[in-house]
Length: 87
Image (tube, rainbow, N blue to C red; front, side, top):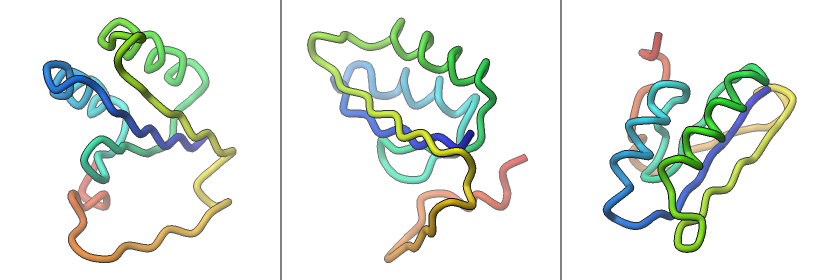
């Protein structure tokens, strides 16, 4: 599955969420990650984020698609990271 994650968390937890998500996904924009995950990886990501955030204060949105071929992506301006260099 292809997952896009956007988050709005307290400044004290931003780096923790970012570092955690970098283990699984590509950093695209401030507070936005995307990439292919298995169902098991997706469950690990949800559990890991839940352990970091405060659900009474923070917000995380998961956009789940069957695969990356079901949408078109365009950019304007500077891309935060060149995803072709991710291994």
